[in-house]
Image (cartoon, rainbow, N blue to C red; front, side, top):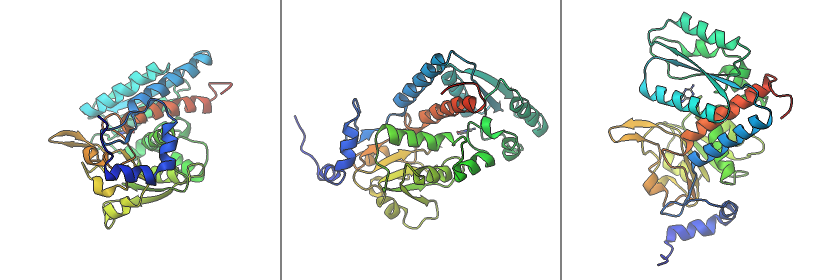
Length: 319
Ligand code: GUN
C-alpha cells in the first residue's frame, strides 16, 4: 500500500525540488524510513578504495607506502589503526607499522617519527591521536614534512589549506566533502552550519565549504553559540562535530537539509553520534548513518591523501 505523504515530507519535496532532482540522477540510492537519502560512507569508501587500487595497478604497481604510528594500548586506537592498514593494503598500498609502548619517552617517539620522515620509501605518515598523557603531540606533528602529513594536521598543512596551496587536507572534513559530491548535494550559494571548532574537523570543514568551487556560506557554531537550534534551522547543510551525543534533533533541521554526523561519544548505550538519527531522518533530505557514514570516509580520504603524497614525492611520472 502506498502511504500518503506526511506534511513534512511534502514540504521537503516542494522546497528542495532542485536538490532532489540532483539526487535522483544517482542510481541505487537508499532512503531512510522517513524518506531521506542515506549517505552511505561504507559503500563510497569501498568504491574509492577500489578506484585507488585500479589507478595504482594502471601505473604499474609502484610502491606507495603509508606508515602508521601507534603509541600505547588504547583499544579504539588499535582498531582504527588496524582498519586503516587493512584498507591501505586493499587499495594496493604498502603499510609500515610502528608500535610503541605507552611509557615511551618523548625523545624515543620523536626519533621513530624522524626516521619515517627521512625514509624515502615512506610516503605518508599517520600518528594516531590522542597520544598517552605526558607526550606532546604538537612537538611530534611538527616533525612531519608537509608532503608526508597525510592527516593534514600540521601547522604547515593547515597553512597550505588556508593559503590555497597544494597540500593535504584533514581526512574527516575531506570525507564530508566527498559525501556531498557523491550524493550531489548542492552547495553553491547554500548555507552550511558546522558545529564544533576543532582543528581536526570544524575549522578545516569551514574552509572547505567556503572555498571556491564549493561556494557554500559556512557558519562556525560551537558550545557557546546562542540558540544553536535556531542557527542550524537556517542551514541547508549541517555538519555536526561537537562530540555531544544526540545534540542535533529534528527541531534543529530545516526540512530537506543535508545532515552529516561526525561526532563520536562513548556512552553507557555504546558509541553515539551527535545526530539523533531517528528523529532527524524524518525531516532531513539526506543524512549519514552512524556508524557507516563519515567514519569510513576518513579512512578513504587518508588513502586518497597517501596517493597524492606519493605523487607529490615523484613516485608517478604521470597522473
Ligand atoms: N584519532 C581520531 N581520529 C584521528 C585522525 O583522523 N587522525 C589521527 N591521527 N588520529 C585520530
